[in-house]
Length: 581
Image (cartoon, rainbow, N blue to C red):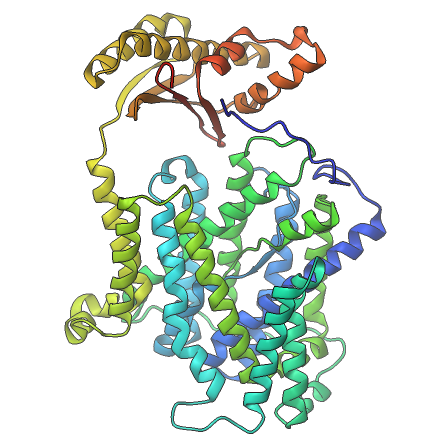
């Protein structure tokens, strides 16, 4: 059976709760910040320039993004109640918001952008607050399709940045800077090893910028005029709700969903490599990370810049260095916070010409497309899932480029479906809901978590088994599993000294020749999956005093046990295979 992983990661030098030397923490923190700095600054720069905003506003947006990423990176490392994951998670500008931010700036200006971003912060806050309810809605097919459509919507913008405006020819030297930027990033990413691969975007942009400077495309005057040290210039755009607001809002909400899913994935990934002994995923930390995601979007809306989300570079950094300590995340965040007070550094980056920015954008879009593919393929690919992804993706492409009924789509719902993310994402959600409605209905029982409820639970499982055509032996296995699971919960309460009765929702569904039981109860601190994973170690270490008979029986009777811990709910999913399977 599988119910957690008790393997050890002995390569880890410092796990999440340990304290490396200050010099090591600061050095790795600066390096981690440097790896993410390019994307944090380049994404808002690309968005603002693509929308034709002034250079003063570009500088303000970049400054605000860097500062916000610094503050929220520190919050991720230092949990305050439900805020923060308490892991080394670096926040950065979100690529998922790029197309909708450009559209908002073009149609309504910075004030419209600020309002839409501010409203979209409700998405990560809502998902974080009741994450246990939304996991069945935010399927990999939906999120992966939306991410794959982001590059589709941004390709025209990338083309304009590479070649200049459609009616002009590219400036001299643009082709050379484009080719060298692309060749450098691709060469290092494909042939480089270790930490060098992580630096490939930075090195590529540096090579492209040097080439552009040789042809006179780099604005040295801007860098020369900037002060070495100074306070950031204020550029708050204010708020505005115009006629385009409700047309643009669905796209921002969808982008908020995508960014939240990526934050959730990043928070899960960093947990996997932050401990020497692998633990079950703590979804309370995931909820904390998503709450910070909401705060980052809130701050971005107040300042009028592109929202931020969690980056996954910290995972690669921890794997390479063997250091997953939270202190490294704090050091990286402090570096980001200090950077806006050095205008010359910001000016040197903002002076990079559009052809180099455009090349970086193309590579970013290619990477983002493959991220969407991996998200869509998560958990395997069957006929239904393939149909949902294929149809939704084609609908998004056709609507965005006006390949089918362009006039009707432009006029319907105020042009809501002209954006490929809106049309494709909504199509994926509708198709997923239809597929879910055709699956076998789950039978549910609502009772109290108490030994007196065991006869009621056994009767419920007998009715479920007979209605599902299960053999008597299989029904007996389900009853035994349910009994041991309930007794485990009850012993957990006794161990924690909490005698208040918790509600229990038990659902049962057929799965092949077996069945799936799901127990939903109020949250407690102990993780059953981790405790089951330790049973194998206890057997080897001869530690009978830590034995729990119910856990051992549950481990033997089930094919897998998965425990998801949220702030308000615990969900334990137990799979029971057919006898002899």
